[in-house]
Image (cartoon, rainbow, N blue to C red):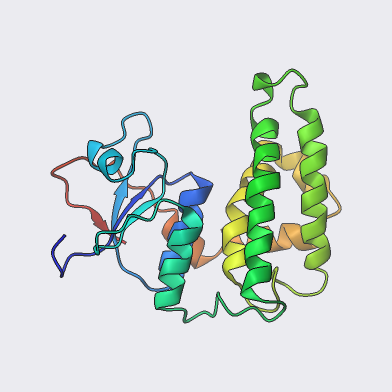
Length: 215
């Protein structure tokens, strides 16, 4: 990649992992060449860089490949963090990373079972109740401050929000009926923000020969 070229980001608009990566890149004011991926027709260029075939994939331009969303977030925010996403008011960066790990390791599998009930003999119902326990914990956190790690948004909020959003969308009426006013307001605040609107802009799938979108 030429020295003047932008980092390349392979992404998919609706993937929550790719969503959190785009949020961090935007918050870090890190320009990149966005290549939207059609998951049923993944570009060979992406697969050559990252055979695992999932998004996001970031090619910073230095020969490295970042294949995990959290790595993309940390790479961007460690380069530039004007919104102090790595500087929580409450707790430490390690505490935030522990919360992200709990989301990814415990909550995400429950979300998948709840979202795709036909794939499971129990219809996914227990997964909703178990997932609700995690969400109640977030509601408790938000009783102390408007964001998950204090008074301003951080990496923790941006990393968790796409998954909470996806859980809420499975049965919006059920989610709205839960006694989680702080969590609901937090989610509405994020999904109604200009930052979220920017990263959710819809682009046509990229193919070789196309000029990527400057993001």
